[in-house]
Length: 142
Image (cartoon, rainbow, N blue to C red; front, side, top):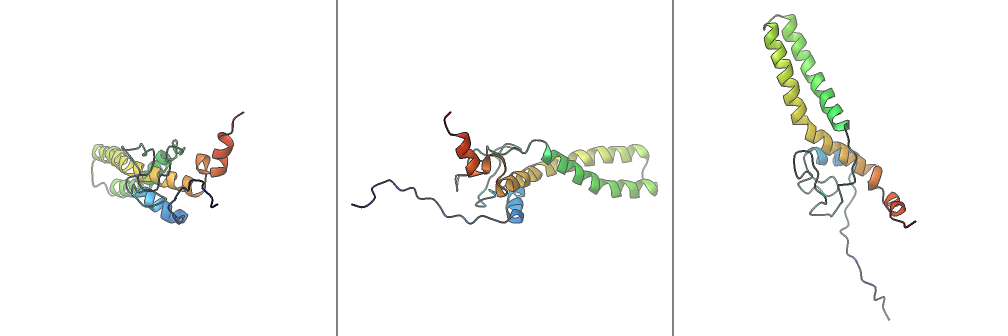
């Protein structure tokens, strides 16, 4: 008699490289299958991918995306402000206004792509709950 156990059909998805997964996450696509969207709202990831079913609630990005966004914003704004300030092109009040608004705008624009990349890298490196072995250990009854 053939095996009558129910079969589950899973899509065979090739695991992407770290760079590909990070670029997918930055574009608001699922790092695993490249399906859109990764985020339901601005910084809240979807519970599960609609295409591959990957659970995205397991991530622990915490404050790291904000650090990345602030770091990049500062490195983009610093040369501009130094150049404008050394040539005395604008009064100091205008430079301060440009610095504050530029930092806010750049940080807000880069926050979601940074979080998408961090979630993608956590998935790729099997960190936190993305490691299947750690999920089996957590679900064992005591």
